[in-house]
Amino acid sequence: MQTLTNRSKQVDRSPMNFLERIYLWNIFKGMFITFKHMFKKQPTIHYPEQKRTFSPVFRGLHVLNRDEEGRERCTACGLCAVACPAEAITMEAAERLPEEENLYREEKYAAKYEINMLRCIFCGLCEEACPKDAIYLSETLAPSNYSRKNFIYSKQDLLIPNPKTETTDLEKAKGK
Ligand code: SF4
Ligand code: SF4
Image (tube, rainbow, N blue to C red):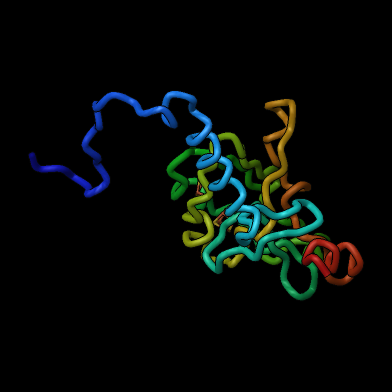
């Protein structure tokens, strides 16, 4: 008979001998296998004290980026929302006022920007679609939560700390 793998075994239906009938031999065999594993390298780690190194292609929580002067880079063009296959991104655009030039890099900015992390599949298409380098997926894991509404991340949750005024927070956000 043709098989998909070479792991199938013929079932032995011959009557059990004395050792097999008392089951002790099989229990010892099982314990020996367990004992052997005690000397193998542990695949588990003591999280959160120990953390694994992420793969270079790991995609975690989103960050809304600022420029070197601390101004928000997002221009609310909506390309990330259009590219998102999960329809997880919503935003509202607003015009920048003359006195807000130190806050927003472009003439238009996102007055409201939200990502629904319950919908997000961390595909990274929003990052690829963005022409302003305004959004990227960081190495931070999206934390768990008890409430569904807490998975809707607002602009304030996503914005990276200001490199001019929040240097300590920025270093912390970078994991330094
Ligand atoms: S990572 Fe993918 S699913 Fe998540 S918001 Fe970006 S485009 Fe949408
Ligand atoms: S994050 Fe980028 S793609 Fe999305 S609205 Fe802002 S500028 Fe446009």
